[in-house]
Image (cartoon, rainbow, N blue to C red; front, top):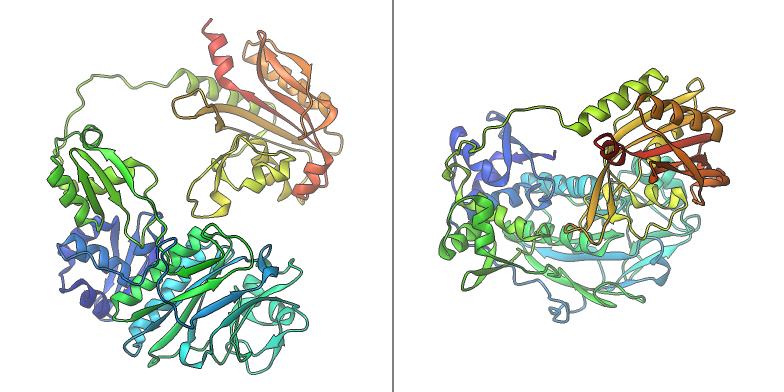
Length: 569
């Protein structure tokens, strides 16, 4: 979970009142946060956030804003936001985007902030926000990177270009000599750390102003001149580049609102693209792009288990900074400009719950008397697990989420029915797996130095699209195993599958199967009692190459639900 360090004096100034430890601990629950440590002599608050869907809380200003509103302060207004089709005046503050960036790092957002001279506490918090947003929310800068510059040294329009990495050079931050963009990847600490993001691209992203002065080489490093922000500066240009427009716009909104809360005036920037984006070819940022969500109050009362009238619900939502429109007993919530975590009416109901106060709900004893016991599926899973271990396999445990690339491209699949997350915190956790085989292959790709043969398995959940189901998907419990060895093949996994089914008292048969994950003619569908229960085959060489695997592999995947149904017959 994200952890932040808040400067004590700055935090309480933004909160509007200094609190004692006990009161602060109690208040932090409104932000799903915990006080990890309070070193009063050092003036530092260490706070752990338990909600990864709220990156707006990962800063001193953002956390103080949420707690301030919860305690009854008015919801702040941020008039500098544009709406789609209704841009704010940007004047000469324009960024021109090069068409060559479309397939490299296509989107840019930003603004100019002018206000009081930045203090040491404010600069530390700005740097922390930059690190948290770009590392946690931005997947180690791959989908979001952020640069802060001295705006007085910049001549607009700024140009965001795709350049030759060997022919373009500048003096990077903390260096005194010029380096080419290619050299930065191998000689600068930030280039060594983040160079993998752009190293395989034919051209690299580059930011310079109208006079040709270098701002930065995003997402790697700022220039030593314009990009060296110091205590005492009062006018800044903040830019963010990335690969996903909505994620980028949300990060921009968070930083802009934080600086506005610190007393800065936010000046919008117009970004001009030569290609289409989700919001057109000219986008004035910061941009409010979130959509309202409506729900019936009866649904909220049913989920919360208490009766709530419309006035109370609106007041609870207001304590969370959420604006609400009411039509009878139907409520429509409009997310704040710095939040994009409302995906379903249940998210709004959760805001009512937190705004009302967790301690306002009386504990209720269960009305039904039940006896705990293992489910039939768990019993079958345990039996299958014992058999697989007895057959010489090692059990693995994986996350049910992964990247689309792992579940589709690396498996030679199109992935039309892959279930994807609407607002993933990371591209590595953007989809729900529909097979365990990619996880097993990922393990094998990292195990090339271990003695062969390799035999490992997992019994776990996966989800498949099911449009006739009320939820649109179906969750399955599956057993999947992989054999990797010089002679591993169809016959090996077939004999292991036969042994598994024998000890489970199940019969099985095979039918030819065409599947791009397997070698043609060396794959089969597995049937039990006339019903298809899984697949079997030798992994296709292209799939092995995609994973960087040098050794032949063969795998099996079985749906345990079908076997469980047959046991009950």
